[in-house]
Length: 261
Image (cartoon, rainbow, N blue to C red; front, side, top):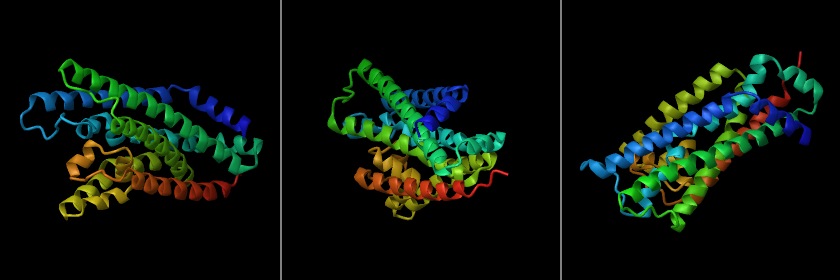
């Protein structure tokens, strides 16, 4: 397993893709966060209020709310790129124990997603806190609720990396997998969550993967838009964790059935 982990880490870090995705993720979250803080401070009609830790944490959690697709996509690419380039064949011939190969990919994908979480959440929180402090508003970074939410956001983004690897093992085709996760995360699930909110059952959205991730992180701007009260982070972690385990098991089963012919 140690050899496999080293091999997988080398495959990821030997290309520019991993840090380019991280760069875009950070630019998106900090840019959008800056806009939201400015709007909350200067737009009278803005629904965002900056008068309590519970409200400010929605801005700190932007990486989970709008950018979790980046560690998810990286996880997908970790597996599908090998099918796309056919390097999966020599990889499995060199290590015929397929469960070890995918296990290493799952651990590596989770590790890189953890880095994504630490960097993006830390940078987003630093930029937001700096803007608030410049306006004489307490950023509440030392508040236990804010600290818990930031740690939860990092954990959620790490799980999304694991889910991405599992999806890659299930789908295999890179184009289909990437288009599929974009369709689900950017359109279908947000529409389903807003539909549940309009039907008077906003908490149903927390049963979906994205909604569970938002709840686990302590709430995001998407929750605020849907009118969801993110009061059950533990339940959110349990739901997202269940999705992770189920997809990982299914991915492992599908991966071990691959014929290296």
